Length: 108
Image (cartoon, rainbow, N blue to C red; front, side, top):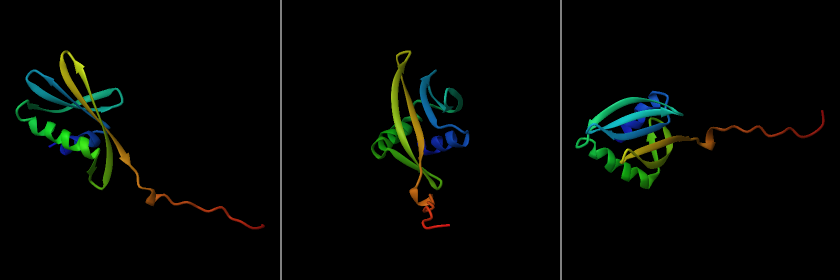
């Protein structure tokens, strides 16, 4: 469930997922810098698997979505006496795709 939410964030052009409790629901917001927009909500009971997945991903610190792998950074802060969760994603680029050109040696 969490991986699908992270995928929605990427498809929306974002790089962070925020989860905030409000009105007896967990609200999911995609962020790109300071701009965010809602991508969904779940009743708190239905969102419990998301928090279990957060605990699992905190140990791995990365996730694969499609053919790409993303490093994950987790933050928590308080807002109106409720915990807000933020997951930042940054693509891990493979050095294998980088082609280096060796400088030419010798005379002209």
